[in-house]
Length: 79
Image (cartoon, one colour):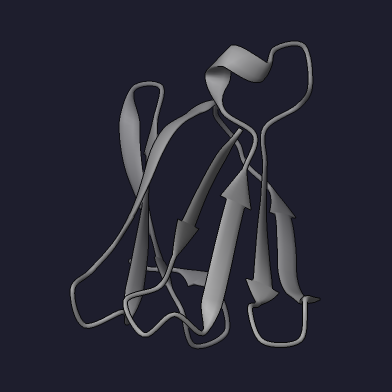
């Protein structure tokens, strides 16, 4: 598993990483101050790492064979 706080410390992202096999890959986003889950989705590939942009507006997932980028506002995948 991997965990990462957003640059402003308000969001915590946790992910099931490739070493967690056979647990399916998943991403969970939490409101750090409340401990409430803000979003959750199944990842289409196993995750090797997480990183926020310095401004905190996007989250990158380093996955097997590609990098997936999500907009924090709505947790939708970027084009």
